Length: 226
Image (cartoon, rainbow, N blue to C red):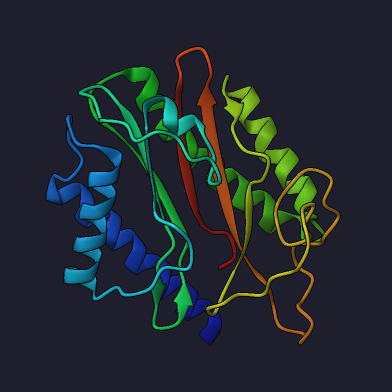
């Protein structure tokens, strides 16, 4: 594992520890507003992990709000005793970006628990598909994970399924979508194409599953390359 990958994996592992700390802390509970949970996560990250910088906004979504994507600005919602919640962190640890999303079920609803389990299964299948297809394009990877969602009885809830990540700030491009550096339909950007300096690019894979009839959604993301 090269030094860059080691740094990215270390940042991701720290973000995963933060998520576990949030669960253990009891911050996620019925009656709490999404905004209050977000503030609690911020305070926990600062006090326990010394986190001072985020490269994107912190997202807490519950119930019907969890069907929405990153750029939506839903009304603040109070968590109930039978909710599916997702958290999306974008912390910077030692100048390396993490982008880490996980979902959590408050309650015992089997459909919600199945959705959360499928998030991880689909991520693993997407990562394996990436590993087995060195000439894979971003568009083809998007189509693949959308197909997994449909086969499992879910709807894929987002117009993209990931993006670049790296040393803060990571490589970006100007102008409106469609963008080469996002995993989206029709994007013929080869995933394994090196950057302008000949270095390997590193990607985040995002899985967003929703059930429109039940008004629920879940989200998982983490580093695709390893």
